[in-house]
Length: 325
Image (cartoon, rainbow, N blue to C red):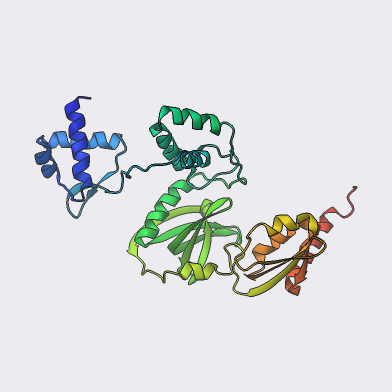
């Protein structure tokens, strides 16, 4: 590519990113070329994945002024941490936006001085991040991108959702409010117009998404936080419980060193066990957490929690009754 054309393309990018919307005629005049050349140059920008767009209202072209981020000065540890999280994850697990993070990490690595790049490369070969197995994510990145835009512009959405709980596909009109990556997968918290409540949707079960042109009125800023308040994880049930558990000494340390819930309190006992308490909304999510500790935990209260654990344990026993050890 001739230097003159490179210079012209850089000049075009600068003009389109300056904040004004420029028509083809205006670009041709600024660059002192023909309209036909402007269209060829625009095609070249598209091939280079420069995200310009056509503003129909103003009949011109522009580039988001925030597309090219300003350079930042990272120290060795900061650069290493970014490359570690983006490039050294175990195949089974995945952080959100893994592919995008990997591309960003490669850009960062290419900008490092050769000596620093070689040092970080040798260190990374001896490091790895092992995450819990993640849910299947085919097509989820695209949904995240589209929903991020819909949330930002407060656009009504139509979805087809496979509900395991109801055992059928639901057709819903929703107001998307927040995206949440929790442990293994992406979730969407949205206002269900049909049910007139906030519901949680797993993105991997969204079979169809269409974004309407209509905008919904902005909800109170803390509506999602209030909805989630008290839930053990992310699905409140509308009833509060004071959970009291006793963990034996074999698992007490592991339980006590983690902040599982903002309301939790831990009291150590002389025998090395702990009393664990928390005020939670709903029993469903915490049930499976308690069961994960098997016979190393005992429910002290409330009775409804103890009955739930007992009933699940009895059903498990029936699976194996009569089988040879």
